Length: 98
Image (cartoon, rainbow, N blue to C red; front, side, top):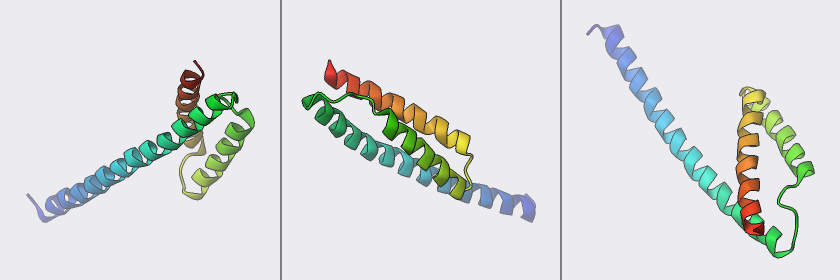
């Protein structure tokens, strides 16, 4: 291996280690988020509140798009990601209402 190849391999390893740590942070963060949304779903079911809150969802999407722009992340990706999470949360909330 040349020095450049060795250096590239070392940089690649460092990037992958960072990616792995960030993936773990994402998974644990999502786990924590879903613990709270599960509690919200139970609370809504106990008080006969609707599983979905379109005004809140719209505000959250706008907020996330703004955060994504600040973080130099594609806002469309962030919106798709949050819409996916919201759909999962609503599904869980609907299960509590059953």
